[in-house]
Amino acid sequence: MSVLRSSAAGVLLTGVISLLAALPAAAQMFPFGGGGAGSNSVYDRQIVPFSQRYAPKQIIVSFGDRRLYYIFRRGRAISYPIAIPRAQDRWQGALRVSMKRVNPPWTPTQEMLRENPTLPKSVAGGDPRNPLGVRALYLGNTLYRIHGTDAPWTIGANVSKGCIRMHNAHVIELYDNVTVGTKVVATWARFQGSGYVSTNPVKDLAGLLGFN
Image (cartoon, rainbow, N blue to C red):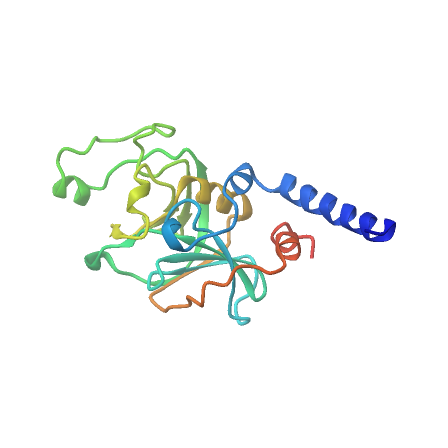
């Protein structure tokens, strides 16, 4: 290898290392991948192409795909698996993130208590049994939230009462990239493509971090 090519390779490697170091800890632990045996697991997290009509820095929740898409650059999104509402709790619409909470406390609604009287009256934030997991994004003035979970095996299923569940590592990453006021579109429309995985991860990671 020539000195010039070696130098260029070194610069590229340094750039990749710098980008990875700047990512949240969750992103470093759980690399982009997905599909196969890892579907709906914490490793099922991909950079995918997305419709150009959607502006960056918004969230599209596709109940049809059972995926949450965070659009980090026009035409590109990070795709995460989610648990979606049960048939009797279907909804859709456009809301804004109204509040963010680290280790949110959980209090079941009266309807939940009627369905399951054995539920605790409340669970403190940070408790490993907390159904909201480690982060929560509150949507408008509704009871709907995008949140983590204490039951990761439910990701990919239609089991919630309206909320959007994510793996804790995924919701930490999303939480760190989202601000109060972020637009969230929840829809039963489908967007799933052909399982695209980025062919230019350095450029896409730079877009995620806001460098381009």
